Length: 209
Image 1: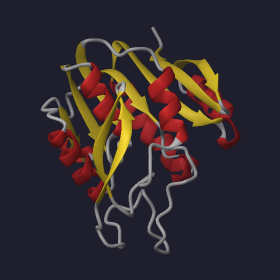
Image 2: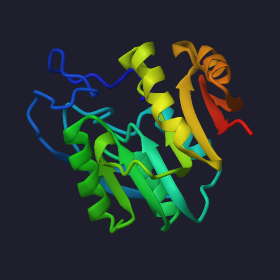
Image 3: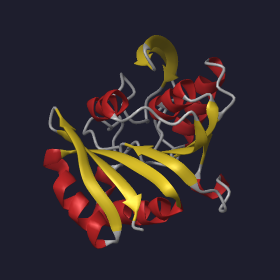
């Protein structure tokens, strides 16, 4: 995810750590999801554990309404705000969240269960069936992992879009949204700026025909 607020207080305990060292001290916060305020669980050692970060909020508010059905992916799901929103908005869809952070995945699963979202699953990359293709990908990608890791991540998942599938990525302008757009085009993806809001770009990415 691209916001800069993802550090845990513990030294070297980042949201992209597979097993955070900080204590798993869960608490409930109320956040806006799919037009209503809903209670979710968060904990230290995961991305944006105090609230929905601004980048994700921009994506949730300004990306187009998701299709009623299909197979969707939240890339870098954290505790689940994007996957939960997709599940709430599209109860006929199968929604997958993927992350490296086991604590975040556990929270996302529990939050989906508490909201009655049997159509949302949160897994590590290796647990998502390799044959799955995605009609929609929403992501606030983890810019802070570094360019090389980020590029590998996108080259792993964007090719798994269906022929008519589309990805929406939110990236802060001053963290390289425009250079990322150019790089995606160089990799052969049809990429355009969908909108700009409060210093963030939402990029729309498709497979080239």
